[in-house]
Image (cartoon, rainbow, N blue to C red):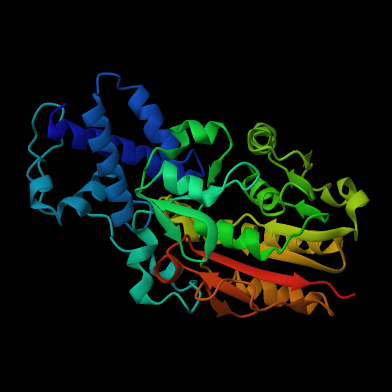
Length: 396
């Protein structure tokens, strides 16, 4: 493909990604993969170049653009060499007209920025969209961090995460034979900090209420030496089905899964009411803390979608609280930098649940900043995904 043809292809893919963002459709990676399958003539260099163009445009443009061309023009305005390729050549984009509309650039729309936690200053905005490193977590059941240092000498320790090892972006660590053997998992440092903050111990009964694919449950199994009983729950069958084979690979033999029917969670967890030593509620959220990895998420967030997340979060944290034994602990977490999903959600919970208290000093030194009754982690301050967490203790 010619360089101009690559740009036109990127424009067409951006059209599909923008439409999906507005309509709640497939994520950008899935759309890009499907587009490449439909263009089998594109070589590996073409694919890499097109992917880079698409994601550079997504990172540059603050909200879903009117068109893929408008997004690419915004990128071309800052790159004269790119603008020169709008030359009308065969399979390439038409020349740029002087009055053509451009998509607006920036970290996010102003209305969305206004929702950020007060700790996320303008100086931190660039880091929210910078390319993320690849973080690994050693599986203590089968290996130690020294093994990661041997396997990946190009990496470095993650501050405050004794099981963590950080690699350059897009390192193909999951293709290493040690991954298939269960020696390590790919897990961002923020999730590693949160899993450790649960303070789970051998012999405890633990519920991972929003388990997804099981990354947190596996981390807890590793931290407890495969000596705690863990119930991993979710309403998404496809995601939860990923956990059993992952647990088998990791040697985590004490994880049980339970698929919950939406709206029937209380009844389906009746046998766990008031008996869990620890409950982890990693609630569905805006994903605003993960823009480094999925920058199109900021194109997807609308007031209505945020309100739905807020409602789900409140229901889940209340559901989780009912499962906690007297004196037990609940860890509430969201991969978000939006105050209403973090500090405000926990403040509302504490108002609804007299007697519950917020813990302090459960993160490694230098990690996170106090945000209301919890802590906020950000890419700029902590080198990890944006994340809010709060550890809450049930009254005895």
